[in-house]
Image (cartoon, rainbow, N blue to C red):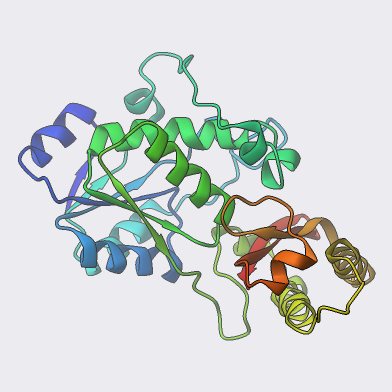
Length: 283
C-alpha cells in the first residue's frame, strides 16, 4: 500500500486509473470502515482510502483535538484489506491556503436534524468531500448509511454539480448487541457501553409502532416521536431528536404516507454521558 500526503503525487499515481473506488474516512478505523473498503472493491479498482480529520466540520466546542487518531493501527488494517493507496494529507497539504470557498447545502436538507444541532457541520463535510473527490477523481465513492443525512447530502451534491462519480451506500455494521460501530464509541465508559444499545432498541420500538398503525389510527407520528424521546430521557440519555422522515428527502412523514408504503427512516441523536451517538433505522 502506498501512503501519500501530497495531492500532485496522488494524482500522478492514479493517472490513467479510471475505475478507482474511494472511501474517505477520519481514521480510527473499525469493522464498519473496513466493510466499506470491501464494498468499494466490488465496484471499482484500485481502492483508495483517505484519512483526514477535517477541522471544518467541528464546532469550537466539539472534539476535534481529542478525536481518536490511530494512524499505524489504521495502516495495518488497510494493508490487510488490500487498499492500493492511503491518501493521508496534513492540513497544510489539503488546505495550503485558508479554505475560504465553502459548499453550503440547501437549508431544507442541511439545516435540519444534525444540521440544526451542529450548525455548519454539513458545510464543512461538503467542502472537504468535494475537495477529496477532486483530488482522487474516483469512479465511485462509498459512504456508510450510519451517517444517513450525510449520505443523502453528498449524493445530492454530486448530482447537482454533475460530478463524474457514483455515490454507493454501505450498510451500517453493528456489534452483536446492536450498537452501531462508531469511532466515538471508544469515549463510552464500561457502564455507558452496556447501556448504549438502548438507542437501537428504541428505534426498533418506533418501527414496530409504525408498522402497527392502521387506517383508523389517529395517533400522530409526532406523538410516537415524543414518546420515544421521553423514554430515552427517563433512562438518563439527553436526546437531541428522534425523527420519522421520508427516505427520499428527509421531510417530515405523515400517517397517510405510511399507509401507502412511502419508505421512511427513523433518525436519532442522543448523548449518553459526554458521548453523542447517532443511529437510524429504515422502515
